Length: 532
Image (tube, rainbow, N blue to C red; front, top):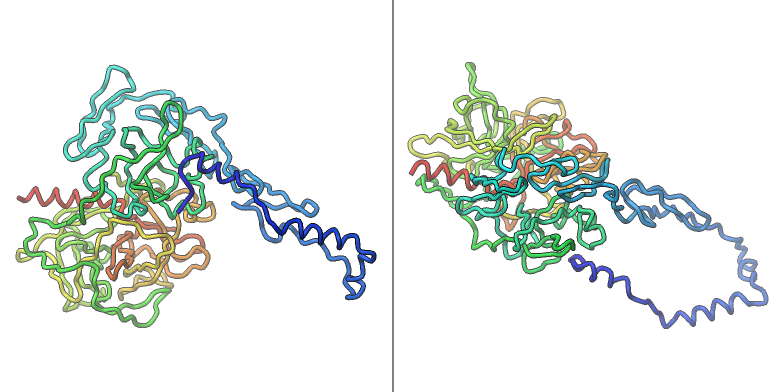
């Protein structure tokens, strides 16, 4: 648990006076030693000479890559921007000369170390000028933007069941009983105020901010989404009220129970449970992974492109329902009829008795999918399978659905990747492979030596930063990263991108599935209603 959220609670921690009953006795003994008639007898008797002073920099006292310089028996730290303090333990307010007229100034760990976050409809770089309130429409989920007479004012009229300033809060934006693990994207307090970013310059003196120790483990970073790091009643955030920083609980309701993904149009799904494989044994090692036995990853999908000479594996995917597959958006550049999905597949070179093949009826790529440079953002898509003989996938030892998580796994969790990706010889493996990987913190992944702030909140990375070992490769795109909770496998990530394969400081990057859970559910429900 972290310190109290109030500034006064934090400051009170420095008001203690430390006292030790043995202090006086130790001082008396020290004085007695110093006034001895022969102060050098100990050294002379044992042949000791005057010891050399220890190097104060040997313990590496400077944090955050600060450079230690010896100053006699002491030291000083030369701190890189934006850090300051005796041991570079604090973040300096880089916004002193930064003016964000209609917004907030945020401190960042990369140059120029500050940036504005503008209130809509004001624009970067200084939030001084406003664009049109309603063009483009800022209201999400089908909301209608209504302009006010004052140029900067607007209202979003939200369809049921959405709410929030931008209609961004839906029924699935709820918190479980253990709200410490809430990782949703609600950023509005109960009083309607928009949350401050956790890296706002206004919060640098507060105990809970983006730069506190282990911020990643509490879901806190360079964003303004509600969190509950101190295990309060429910998720909360900091806001400004009458020019002062306060905190308030967020406009989030408790989850009424485990949401179901049941599709009324699927009357013959036949899947009893999710995330429960029957085969667990692994065979010989292949390139930092293992050749798996059939049925070990029964939710694994081979997405294939149809050609005049047959079909060719292009990406992985994961079965989440009888008629639904989850994959990466960047895998889908052609029409649905150009693709097919193969379930229960183990060896790409031959036809197998356990496989099930389906055409793709519909492709749904996330509406905010985009590529910037070589990096895909919101890299997720759904495939609706075309039923055969009135049904889609049928459960067997080799074909099962994986579970969808409505929670977040902590950094350091051991998870699994699988696919037919590139091996150490740069060839696509014909056999399904898998490997173990660890979840890595967002801060480590976005470090200058790694991906240098390329990851946003919808991504995470996994693997090993220092020792290149197991990694996801190009052929694995769209495949699952699964983690285990209470004996069931959950698809926590979709293989998205990376810098080649297995390189130092370049682990695989994944789309974070819980971030898109509301989108997944809403699309499946929408398709279900359209067929009723």
